Image (tube, rainbow, N blue to C red; front, top):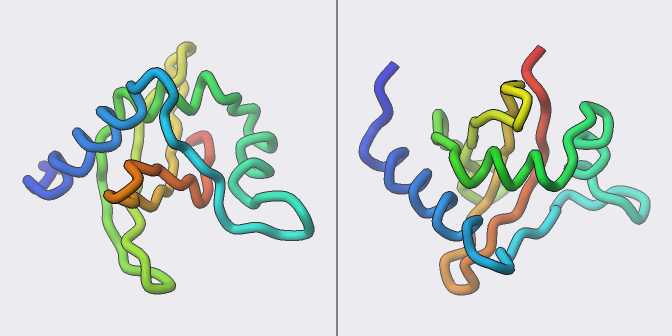
Length: 106
């Protein structure tokens, strides 16, 4: 499957923003004082280093408009070669990457 130019450009933006010394990464979708994304990362034993490694080398395989936001499926690998998926929303004005959910491909 080939990526569209839009996907390539978005992936480059995610990689660039996440390679900053202090990347602006937030975790969305709050439930009961926690976040869905952090709960899902914990469920699949994905730590913050795994997340950064994946996003700093990701490719974008899908884009969808949900709840009024463009959500991108960013895929990559952790240090052990495990395939990871992060659904993210991007905010250009603040160069923010909001992680909506995440999982390890089994």
